[in-house]
Image (cartoon, rainbow, N blue to C red; front, side, top):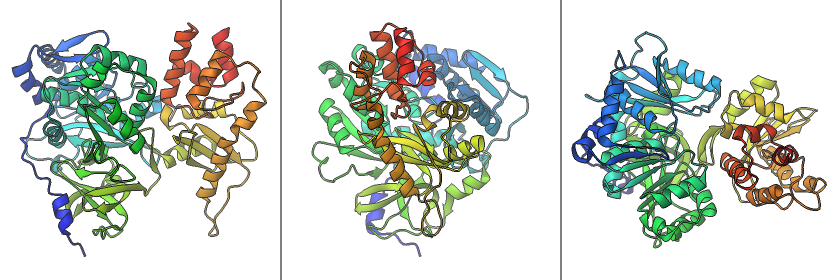
Length: 581
């Protein structure tokens, strides 16, 4: 039996009256008031709102159909954002694709969405001439249109395409505008890839307010981000917590740049109290927020304003309050409301809930339900509980999905890809490095260790860089529980133990005098010993650290090297030979 508690009525009392607008209408409105304002700036160029609308209208004339899916290679550029507006102005919807994704992943997305057009750089290609049926048209409000299909990790090895409409996204944008008091004087720092929904706030939130969008080439290049913040008026930071954490540890900003910051948004992963405190200390004049939700619910659904007065009220940063016209529920296995303090699945309701997954009726019906009392809900797969009448505490996941460095990944997707390629029983687990950062470890059942460099190379044809395990360990036989299932806890312990003991092996490979390169690596990874046979991946390198290593080599050794070269060479000795040759 479903029931409603008084505290839930108050907690979910989020009704707000917002007008209904499409995202390209924000650009048209901005031109009426801020025609000469700078809309977007990157390292080499800038464009006003008037120029942006003119270019978008001209580009929109290339389309000969409406209501069709348009794939976009999501380069970080003014031209890509012009393409997004052109797609909207022509009555179509966009599907962002990571230019660095494996070819098989790109093709999966094109096939799944039946993309009719493709923008790649400045070129528009017609992929086919068929009229593609508009997904979920029957679920859309009158006057609404599809905005985009954004892909997230799937548990079966195939990404899921989340279908969102203009009105759904606009609700979130309006909440943020009013809550944060965003204006034409704000500068939005676009750190996230255009393939991730955090970028939707940056791109269209700037247009909603008449502010300026500042593009950076790579969110992992902290020196470049620091230069942008010093040389431009950046007031809005929006990233996953790990990017903020790395940035604050690597870059020292001037007081002027710190004081420019008005709003710091961190979402997509757990925000630690230490990071929250450091952010408050660094940006003393800024409002600091932890946000949560899902791509399936129009960017964000819940947030918590972290202040010096409340940061020590709990041993954790609370999940927070639902945003305007959205609701948060904790459901039991029968989809009834959990009792206060009882753990259950977090469900999201309200105006932000996506329409479903494109061309995937099975997953849509499982994740998106029509609740008899609570209405349309998205079942997040996250486990949480109410710890006070005001706060939800996040506990973990109920499935094989996880967040690693802000990326949503599927452990079973990685495992299935490995199984299909190599035919070996395996399990992907998460362990921690010395700084308690999550690392992916794949344990496989085999009497002989495989060629890990070859395995990574083959996996890279199907997985993105952040999905490839850092570590690979072989076991002759997997440990089993009493009921005959693979003992995941014991596998995790074995992988963690192997990782912790790697320094003993490195001691035998260490010369009396380390190169400057190895000294730098020790600082990056927080270890005392690094041997010539050590692998960057086995040391747990992430994409942010890869960029730092690349920048160090180019700045200190005056040697140009690509991320692909570093990735391919991998072993410390091979990299040293390349650098000092």
